[in-house]
Image (tube, rainbow, N blue to C red; front, side, top):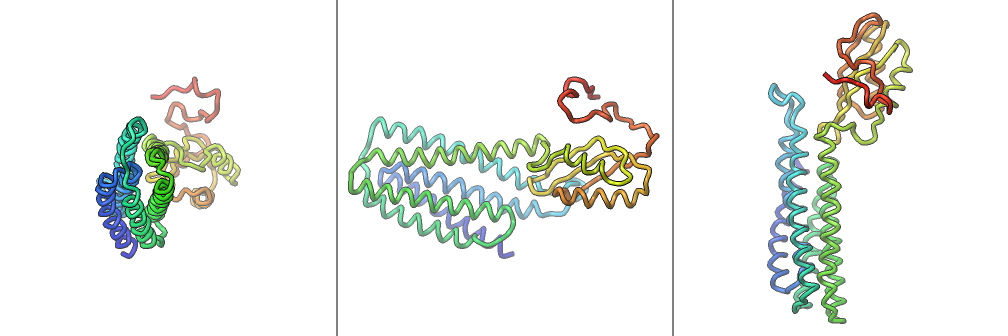
Amino acid sequence: MKTEKNILIAFILNFAFSVFGFVGGIFTGSVAIVSDAVHDIGDAASIGISYFLEKKSKKQPNEIYTYGYARYSVIGGVITTFILLFGSVMVITNAVSRIIEPTEIDYNGMIVFAVIGVFVNFGAAFFTREGDSLNQKAVNLHMLEDVLGWAVVLVGAIVMRFTDFALIDPIMSIGVSVFILVNAIKNLKEIIDLFLEKTPHGIDVNEIKEHISELDGVLDVHHIHIWSMDGQSNYATMHIVTNSDSHKIKEKIREELQEHGIAHVTLELESKDEHCHEKDCHVEFNANSSGHHHHH
């Protein structure tokens, strides 16, 4: 598969280069270069992980993984995020100590490394530019981010070369790290939301409830549960009270949910006089029910 091959090329380029970047940072005495190398290693790790997990997450559901393997790609995100969190915190502490005690920086060496950095990462970005999977898009975004990171360092190095203002280096380094940190935390929040089975982004349970209640033949809708495996494919289950032909009702509801981006639906149909067995069956999702319903 073309996508996977491109991801692999990008991974090898990025990984080899981040090691080179570390060496370069130590060699030139620049923490900004080290922080870019951390960024690159984080990206390489995430690409490597998502490469293997992407393959795994495409596997079909079976008896053990009845929902399929989609969450594996999410776990990839967890691992990467922690690598990035750890890396950026380390770099920030390093840069702060640099501000307190400035050291010599080899500006020319720094310019050379930054130029190579821009080119290598541009190459990796070029390789991953096509592909429609979410993972692929994310990989490409990482690559472009890396190009920008190195471009910033390059500009900084050139400015320092002519002004000899060495504080620019740790300041750039902190900039890059804070950027990584903020993104990693955002990522983590999204991942935690998935594992907490929160209603996926952009889906309003009350709106869906209204739309389904308005369908001909639907007397009541309750027990709506909507969740996502990987932030892409959404699942829903619900109970429908109806006296109409079940086949038609199901078709209508599935069509309605498809429009809301929910492809995988399980419906429980009940007749009007049937007793729903669950205690908090008719509890509405609204502010005043929060204290009242009893879970079993």
